[in-house]
Length: 135
Length: 288
Image (cartoon, rainbow over all chains, first blue to last red):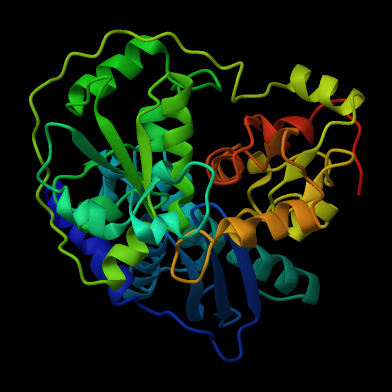
């Protein structure tokens, strides 16, 4: 995919964001980012108690890279039915390469905002499940 | 002089042009270079004002290694690439109420490129007026731009300048949000590298969030309205030697533009080290 197509894909995700909205019954609500710089997102997560993701969504506002990349990663996680362990193991560089370093430049933080917040949401979920005696 | 700008009573009305003026000068590429500078780096790719070039504050204006701006050689090269000569009138516009446009303008001024303007209302006004946008990236012949001298002293403040200013009880404006000013917000969760070890503000600084200078349509408020804010509320006065700061010096460049060009304050400096420097300094005085 050339640069123009990859930009168009991000723009499409911003215009038609996937899995965006507040998740009813979320067990974790995890904020991330900065509204003054690049963007901020909130990830909503519900687990099935066995390490799988039962519900996932996001809200947020920010620039094209941060919002587009957040929509892309959630689409991928839900589309491929990734487990929580797989989300934690997901390599940031895979996402960066998919978007393209030629687009991201030094704005790596913007591109990884959604994924890093999602990982934090999963960690919080697992910590709380552990505390309550289950996964 | 454009009446629409003239009516607002600025000290230097020539620093602003209207969207209408830009529309009339789109093809005056011999004399005018329109520069888009955004926070959202992809906006230019999505669409931009015809014949506008992009200058990105991260990729183009920052030194890639040291926390500083580009050196004079790189600035000259950047200007040459964009087809800008020392005589070119550079008109900046961008997203977020021209936040990054004024930041780019401030950096241009460090290098003595004084023939600069801002398109009042920025990108949002241009779009709201349904003016033409394009994805075509213009190509200009490489220009001759002699390597300039960078002079930081007049419009840029360093930590030592702030120390002296503090001792002299000089006026300062903290243009961050009230939460950052009060110290409630150090940084957003997960981004400690963007924040500081301590929250609050430099003692004596007044808090005027930068965007208060702008109307809902993205244009700057009139001089009377601005005076009411910066002089009536924040206590500044004509002739004051003022230092403005924020988190990394971007929002405060907007306030620097307002005070310097629109209200005619001749001695305004932007402390770009800002809170990411001051809030991490050992024993730096802080007020909450």
